[in-house]
Length: 84
Image 1 (tube, rainbow, N blue to C red):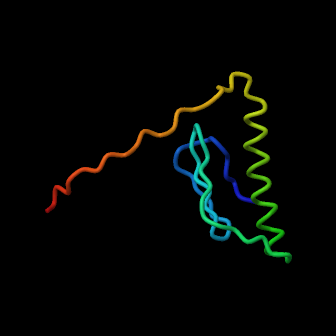
Image 2 (cartoon, rainbow, N blue to C red):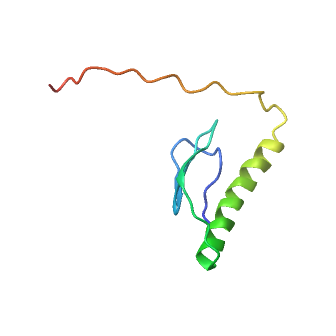
């Protein structure tokens, strides 16, 4: 199991197979793919993923002032390349 602490910072990330988990203080992003194979490697990956999700759910469950929703990120703007 890793030392990944959900919602602890805006910098940490973790990869499990081809699944990436990026930390944030207001959200955790999961993207990519993960094949949980029925072997020791698949079990280890499943246990790691479950532990991270269990931590996140525990933190949110115990937060009494949890908001109803968080605003999505503002859309990014395209700017011209200053080096051209």
